[in-house]
Amino acid sequence: MKSMTTWGSQRLLNLTSFREIEEVLRRGTEFLLAGTRPESGEFFHGTLVAIDGREHLDRRRALSRMLGPRQPWGPEGRLFDETFERNMARVRSNANDDIVRFDLIDFARRVNWQTTAVLIGLDGVEDDQQVTRFQELAMPLIGGLTVEHLSGDHAAMVADARRAMSEVRESMFQPSFERRKSLVRVAKGGSQGENGLIADLITSLIAASIAEPDVDLVFRECLALLAASVNNPVWQIAFAVDDLLDWLDRHPEDGARTQEKTFLNGAVKETLRLHRSARPYLVRRAVADVVLQSTGRTVKSGTWLALWLGQANQDPTVFGQDAHLYNPHRALADPTVQSFGIAFGGGPHACMGRPMLVWEQGAEDAQGTLTKMLRKLLSNGIRRDPDAKYELRGEEGGRRFMRYDILMPARGR
Ligand code: HEM
Image 1 (spheres, rainbow, N blue to C red):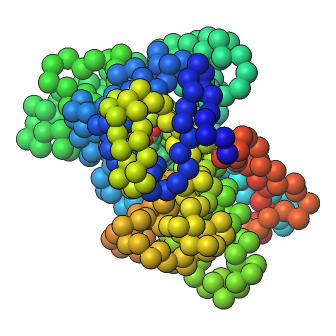
Image 2 (cartoon, helix red, strand yellow):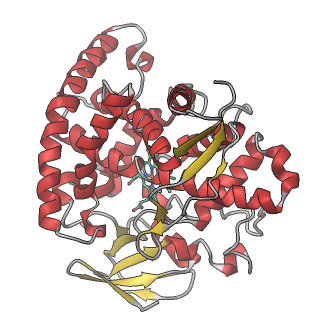
């Protein structure tokens, strides 16, 4: 890899080693995120992913209840299970022979968009038609939110995103926001306070406002969460299925463990470590001269950095000589390193979705959504379609399946 990456008008210094990237992410007061999204800044400014320091910490605190395990979308909640079952029933009802065929990407996307709408607090995304409409409305918006990482006509993408933004705001966000404002007002006057309310993003931000909530900021925060959460889990689940089906072909003895939380968590974490499906690198800006303790490298103030998570997560000095291979039983020598590496970033901006996706604590059925999805798909008897083509698309370090064909016995119809 060359030492520099070009990104818009910036030249970025490439970092690929696990230890250096982990350190840069951890040292969040010297390496900032703010200001690193010049083109999508109009959609993101002032949000969690565009601020640092005290303000950022306070915003994360305001959202912490949103990630409690008992929330409907959390590992002890039932929202994901119900949404999965509803979508599975739909797929099965479309089958007209003994084998059910479906595209896992479309399936996972529908499940994920429905649960994300509830997590954000957008009403009226419950049935299949409403999900389709939500996707159609919000897809161009996601393009605008990630424009720095896309090739093509950026000005046109931003213009499409602006149009989608005003439609989403008017038809979906505004009524949901007003409803929650009254719910919070009533709850604050009651004996339980806002603790009795569901802690979706909109409700949490309204409840945390001392004066009148800043509706523009709450809306932008919804967009930021949407961009962070709708695509990544979909691409990861296709990789998780692909990796595990391969592994089970070669290790049939693990077939008996495909409903076990510990085994499936190990499988999901190994997939997260091995596959980076979103933008291939994170960006940071040094705001002081820094000497990295991990390697002694000097980084001058004003340097922009590209942090290549995928390469770091296959660093053999941390994950072993077979770091590039999938092994759901992988044990690491260093107890301070997570088995998914830095797939969820690290430091102050580490992924807030992690406890929803992978969950170690609690009862056997308290599971993150990636683990639940994998378990439920396997219990339905899924397998790959021998006639299908499985192709990865995207740039180096950020590849994904755009379609993933699945076969499944039509039992239980
Ligand atoms: C497999 C799926 C996911 C992966 C691999 C992933 C990965 C990441 C990474 C690497 C970051 C750090 C970005 C940076 O430092 O520049 C991040 C941030 C974030 N993620 Fe995720 N994410 C996933 C799903 C989700 C979900 C489902 C949510 C919903 C709650 C979510 C919410 C966030 C938020 C809010 C941030 C920004 C945190 C901050 O800036 O303080 N993510 N994610």
